[in-house]
Amino acid sequence: MTRLRINLTALLSLMLISNMALESSALELAVNGGFETGTFNDGSPEASWQQFPGGGIQSIVSPGNGSTFAANLNVPVRSQTDPPVDNLIKNANLGIGIVTPGQDITIKWDMRGSLTGAGGVVFVELFSELDGGGVSKQEIYTNAPIFPTADWQSFIWNTTLGPDVAGGVTLQLKASCGPVEGCGVDAYFDNVSISVIPEPASVALLGLAGLALVGSRRRRNG
Image (cartoon, rainbow, N blue to C red):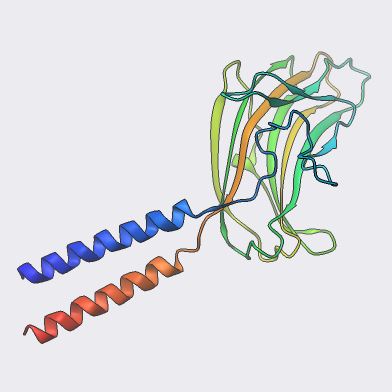
């Protein structure tokens, strides 16, 4: 019994170490997630953050949250006759050929800001992209808008990808205002991370192999 207990303890320790190793090897997909280039671009031919102001204002500001820069999505205060505004940026088509259908993914970001009047909201959205256009899954964090506060807040979103990710994944940050008089949004984002969680299959296989080893030792020892 003592030897079995020792074997089980060793197995659990091995599984824990292996799981920690897998988590530490998570692949970062976000490009220029901290906006530390001082622009929405990381210097590559294609902008790392695609910009769609929609009538709002987009800028890189300083300081960020423990960093030099952050992104600002601003929707100026609207009059009742002003059209709605969706002010958004995208880190688009990431991880093509790397991400897999149904894979675990973790998204992190920091946000602060303010809302003026009624009707202003912020959305964080994830798209599982098809090759050539369209999506196999579209998901909104908490399935609802989030509301910035004056102080920086850190968010973590664990979810899974759709059944087809041939076109990679896209993260969209959006500040929106409807045609509501007095509506305004001033949202700041920093430290955006999009990481693929290693598949747990290898940990499960390791556990099964370890259990088989323990069983064989029990049989040999009577």
